[in-house]
Each structure stands twice: as C-alpha cells, then as structure tokens.
Image (cartoon, rainbow, N blue to C red; front, side, top):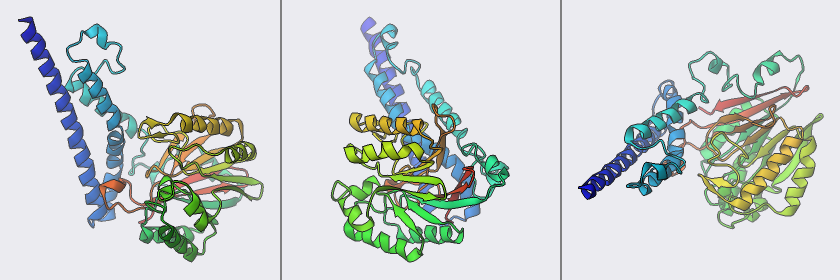
Length: 381
C-alpha cells in the first residue's frame, strides 16, 4: 500500500511540473505572437502603443523563465523526498501549480512597478519615460543653468539600416550635438556589414563615436574588424568642464586586457557620464557584463565588479549602456546618486531571434552647466 501511495505522490508531482511548464510555454507563445503582430503587422501606433506597457511586463517574465524552469527542475528532483529534505532548496514554497502561477503573477506585479503607465500624467512629459528617471527631471527643469550639450545614445541595429537612418534623422531633427553608438551594428561583425553601417552614419552629418557590441565581434572573435572601420573602442571627450567616457565592455566570455582596465580606473575618477556596450548592473542581474541570461563567467563578472567599484569611488552620475533591447532605469544600491540606464533597440522586430517588445527607440541625454541632467526615451516612430 505504501508503494502505491508513494507512486501516486510522484505522479502528482510530475503532473504539477508538466502543467507549470505548459503554462510557461503558453505565456512565451502569447508574447511571441503579440510581438510579431504589433511589430510586423501594420497596426496603427495609437493602438499598438497602448499594448506596449503590458507586453514589456510580459517580456520581463519570459526573460526570467530560465529561473523558474530551473526551480521546477529542482522541484522534480525532490519528488518523493520528505519535506524536511526539501527545505534545503531555494524554492521550498513551490510545491504545487497554484504556487508556481502565483510566483509568476507576483513577478509581473513587481516588474509593473518599474514600467511607467503610458497614460499617466508623468509619462505624457514629452520624451521622458518617468519622473523617477534618475530623480533628475525636476532639478533639470528647475535649473536656471543653460544646456551645455545633448547626446543621442543609440544601440542594437542588427543590420536594420533603414531604422538606423530613421533614428539618425530624428536625432538630428531634435538638435543633438553628437551621437554615441553603444553596440551591435551587425549580427556577425563582417567588414562589409560594418562598412555599410558606417556609410549610413557618415551620411547623417552627425558627430559620432561608436562602441562595438558582442555581435560586432562575431566573425573575428575580437574587435579587429570593428576597429578597422570605426577606430578606437574607448576614450573620453569634454564639453566645457563636463567629462564623458565611452568604454567597450562587450566581450561576453573574454576578459578585458590589462591596459584598457588600467586606463578606465584612472580616467573614471573625474568622469561625470559613462557610456558602455553592456550594463554593469540591472535590477534582475540576468544579463550584465559577465552574466548572460543567468549564466555567469566568473572572470568577466569579477571585472564587472572591478569596474563598478571604480565607478562608485569617482564622481560618475549616470551610466548608459546598450545590449538589452529595452529602455530601463535602475538606481545604484550603493552610490545613491548614481543611476544605471539601458537603451532600447533601433532594430524593428522581424523575427523571434531578435525579439523587441518595445518599439524602435533611442535615448537623449541633456546636461546643463550645473550637471543637472535629463534622460529621455525617444520612440523612433
């Protein structure tokens, strides 16, 4: 009799796991089909924009699916074990399908707090994603100082030169002083593709600087193709007494060499604004320098911590990075006046491989003489 009870319990646990996986699968399909519909179909902007917020919330859950499925696998490995043994797990509260669904629901609720309601009053401020944007919007607007400079930050083209051209035209129309590209002109870093992207950039007439993304290193496994076309991958520039730094940290599984690391640690001390290929920190920490979709490279992540420690000892107020295909903002938990931003993708979604649930977009950073600043999230169309 005990054998049959244990057998029944194992079967129930197996059914719960399969059911939860099916729920996740359905969620992924809904997000994928929605993305294709709203980005590939000719849906009027006034309609599609109303769905962009909810889709972004769903995306954050999908990108966390690996975390949940890993927890489900852990649950499966505990099937048939006594409850005391299961308490050693990091996910002891997931013991049935209802709890799994609740965890997913709680995740969506938590993430929704980070996504401004497009219909709220604060989201109607032209180009400003949220008044929480670095706690900077009100001081910037109130400051009597003049604007020292405006910089467009653009990222993740992935060979979509049509939308790169649209982004450049919009940035130029908004009167930016210069543009900084944060990585992934291409999918594989071929010289011809990089040269095509440079021709588009040059045609804009804008002053610009370019950083490579991880995809731009694909063919050579390093930045050699990129530097042949665009030149140096790190440096600084000044506007009046305001110092800006740009730095390539795009290699996912290869450490940055000693010379660039030493240069960074020296130059960061008096830098005000920092631009990177990929973020050092996000709220979920699922994709930052040294962690790709939850998988950590110990050596590269150690360098992430070195860079972040150096930033925190200096005067940097803002870090803006590419790679995530999503606009986001995150207050540093250690240095309270430091904000981390990621830039949305220029790419217009055409396939699940290049999934963007936000419409094509870029960021404009405006800085006044007194260092007050505003970060604006700019949809391209």
